[in-house]
Length: 342
Image 1 (cartoon, rainbow, N blue to C red):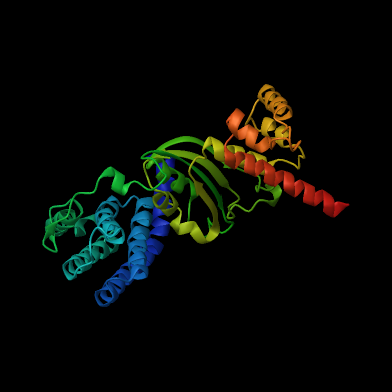
Image 2 (tube, rainbow, N blue to C red):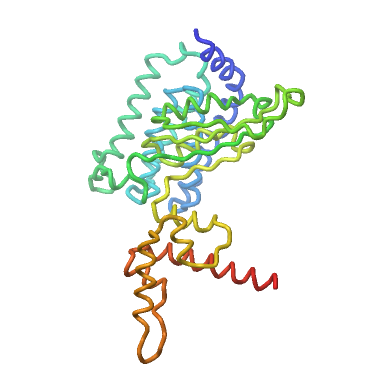
C-alpha cells in the first residue's frame, strides 16, 4: 500500500465516527421532514430542507469513498430534485417510497465499516428501491393518471452553467482542521474524482517560520481549477465536513465582459474613461484615437455639444455597455474621492 493510501486510511478511520454520527442526524431529519410534508405537501421550505439533508449525506459519503451510499442517495436526490422543480408532486406513494429509501440510507451508513452486513437480501431490496425511484424519475411511473416524461438535459442543466464547467475553487482551511480529524489532501483527491484538475496551487502565505510552526495546526489552503460536469452544490459538498472552519469560494469562470468589469473595479483611481478601457484591453489605443476624432467631428452645429464618449465607444468600438458603465462608475467614484480630499 502506498504512503498516500495509508494516510487516506488513517484519515477515514479517525473521521468515520463523526461521519456516521452526522449522517445519522441527517437521516433522522429526513424522516421528520417527510412526515411533516405529508401534512404540508406544498411547503417549499420543508422540501428544500429535505433535499439538503440527502445532499449532505451523499457529499459526505463521497469524501469517505462510500460509493454505495453515494450511488443510492443520488437516486433519492434526483427524485427530490424533480419534486422541487414541480415536475412531480410529493404524493403519499412517493413519501412512503422515500421513507423506505431513508431506512436503506441509514442501514448503509450504520454498516459502512462492515461489508459483510450488506447481505444479498439487502442488495435485492436496494435494487428494488432504485427501480421504483427510476420509475418516477425516468418517466415510467403513472402519477396522477399520466405518465411522467423523462427529464431532458436541458431540464437538468443548471441555468447559466454548461454541462462541463471549469470551476475555480479557493479554499483556506482553518487552524483547527487537523485537530478536528480532517485532511485537506483527501478533499483535494475527492475533487479530482469529480473530473479533471487543470491546475492546483498551494497557498502558503499563512505558514509561519519553522520555529513557530505547530505540527497540529493547519496553515494551508489551495486554489484549484476543476473541469467537471458536477454542479456547484456537489463541489461545495466536498467541503461539508470542514464548512465551519474553512473559507471557501467556488465560482464559474467569468465571461470576457465580466473579466473587464472586474479589472476596471480593481484598478487604482483613473480619471480618464478612455485610459481605463485601453488599460484593461477593452479597446485599442488606435481605436480610442479614432473614436475621439469622431467625437470632435460629431459636435452638433446647433447645440455645440459633443456626443458622449461612452455612447461612441459602444457604437463605434463595440465596447459592452456593462464595461462602459463600470468605467464611468469608477470615474465618478474617483471624482467624488478627489472632492472629499479637497
